[in-house]
Image 1 (cartoon, rainbow, N blue to C red):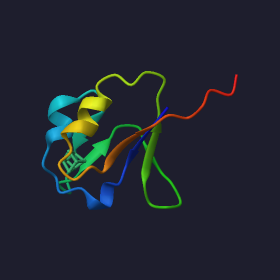
Image 2: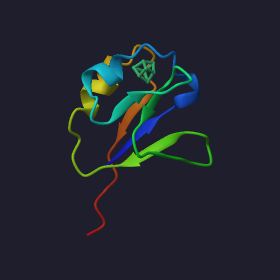
Image 3: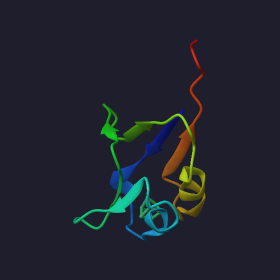
Image 4: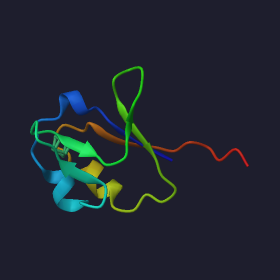
Length: 76
Ligand code: SF4
């Protein structure tokens, strides 16, 4: 599965980092960063993960819903 973060829309509320510090941290520019994520051609950050972990809580806690969990079908 993939976690998607529309970082440019982030308002820096800190909720995601509070509920899921393993994956989320607040950066110097005041926005949240999904640790280890890479930016794609649509300027959205993505991170492939095997286990959802606390990212559902992070997504649920975001007041502007810019954290999304995407289920990518297992090819095997
Ligand atoms: S919860 Fe959403 S708006 Fe708040 S810091 Fe995290 S990504 Fe940004």
